[in-house]
Length: 153
Ligand SMILES: [Zn+2]
Image (cartoon, rainbow, N blue to C red; front, side, top):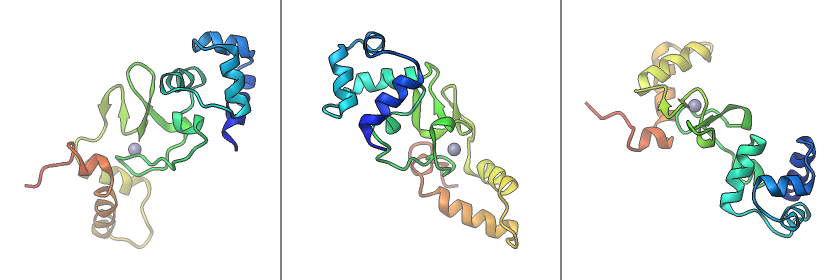
């Protein structure tokens, strides 16, 4: 889908006129018209307001240039499963199961791997094989490579 249609589709879906949308996100009606014709894109601050208003990610508003993957569990992210900050804005790094209300659900990788093995066991794999596979996949994600990474013993 082209970016310009996203703004038009979302506005129609929410039953707003260009004037009404403009008022809600503090821009002029002409600005809304320009997004819908593809002449301009909203500013970063306006994208945040639109994301809150329409309940879609900024990635979606920009025409989904990135395939988002949860940086904790590796699940592909769509708007319905994105995590949210306590103020209701989306956190486009994590799924809603890994991060909610400003807190991470998994304090260490072992607990997450237990969960993954329980819910998506690969037939024929021993628990040890599954654990080694998930540990390899997870360690590539930012959450486990960054400041939250479990410390080596
Ligand atoms: Zn996740």
